[in-house]
Image (cartoon, rainbow over all chains, first blue to last red; front, side, top):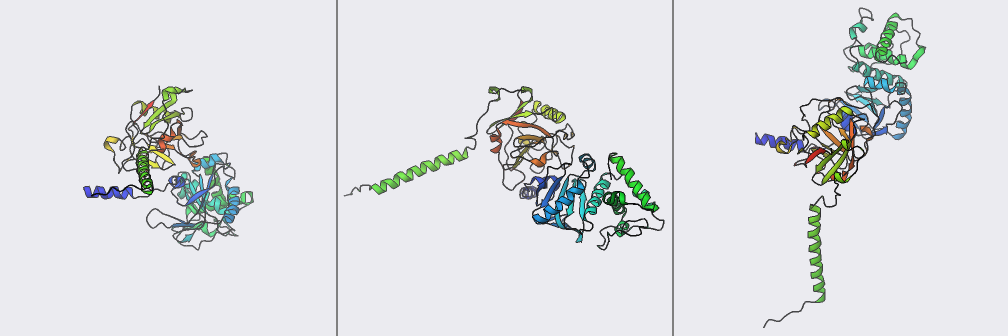
Length: 243
Length: 214
């Protein structure tokens, strides 16, 4: 027992300090402040070195540092989009930290962003496909909203909007062939990616509402039900929210 | 017959040099060992305060740290802090988490006491009074010397542990409940024992006592 205690104590004592405020706050290593005095109190951080994250030793989330020129360019785009969310709204949905890095992947599948409402963090891949980049920001913000308000965004209610024989895929990261292109004929879904899971479908609707704003003029009954659902539930979180 | 050899001038110089060096080394050793030698001592009873009812005095090995508490910023947290101070709960508790020139944390009343310090658990102890809510609504810039309530990774888990920062920490605003500021004696905290690259300080320094001025 004494040997075990000595071993345990030694193990505790050799754990090196990550004397890093950012790491202490959001548990992501190798980050520095990019900008913290923003109008809606979002704090932008950037990777100074590649980092790996994960719940176990596999650490299957991977992202790389970027050059200053890319950071500066993408920060403008990201902040322009995220400034549409008020400080109050961001507080309600638990979003405070935006991590900027490039070539973000989870289980080796590239992704636009990884949200975590518990750490109030959204990791964004600033090298993500430019065609969808801005819309993807709102898509990822919706995941934070959804994770913070699971009770509002009921999946079974959503599933009933679709045709009876439709089934979502098992998961959104099961393959990397999902396409984000907008369908010309929607048939209940904005994109192929919408068909992956309920939460991705919701996020696609939300991101279209945010990105295309009033340009959506759809006669698709299913899409209209989904839009109504998203708008109603977002207004329950913040009745002053504007799409 | 023994011939007396006279010491030469150069030998005399070397002897004097070695003697001076020995004296210098010994003095330096003693000075370095006395870590509190150049720390200014503050007696709170010789200082005039605007709000003496909100002044707390933390006594550590190198002297007093005089802290002004901010009940108008964080009423519940300051109330909890004062309650624990008045009960003497913080006396003889370890500065269990010390990061050089950055942060110093203490106040684990369960596992951080001198008589039953538990290295395996220190930092996780509770006061027995339950947790309180984070108070983050007021705008508050965390600057060197500010005092805040520590919490777990989750909000609203503040209890008895507190920290004092030794450098400005802009990211702390809106994250940790501020409760006050060191007015005098931050040098005392800079002398608290730390261990480079280690989280927990083995054989840490302790708060001798923490009391309210009035």
